[in-house]
Image 1 (cartoon, rainbow, N blue to C red):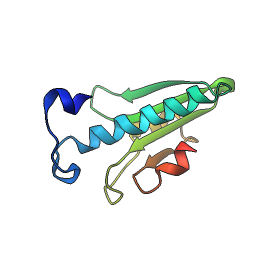
Image 2 (image 1 turned 135 degrees about the vertical axis):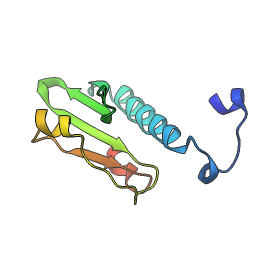
Image 3 (image 1 turned 60 degrees about the vertical axis):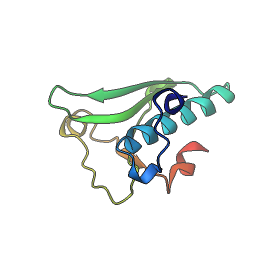
Image 4 (image 1 turned 90 degrees about the horizontal axis):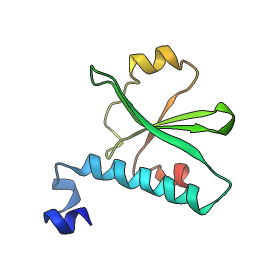
Length: 107
């Protein structure tokens, strides 16, 4: 829908917004799966600090379980967990979702 409005239909690998498109696709697909399975519900957030440390998706499940995801279009991109995340949630790793392993997180 977005591309129909603004017009860029170039190859995904040459686009500057491919990371944002990947994040949007991953989050919307997780939401669809949770809605289609009525017994699944999690509050979804993102975390970003004033100094631009961020976690792309944080899910808070019933019972207090928290899961965190960082989406990377290319698997070889380096990722470091934000220091503020490690300080506040030392036992909760930030999982990396790429095109190669997305099925693991969407099933």
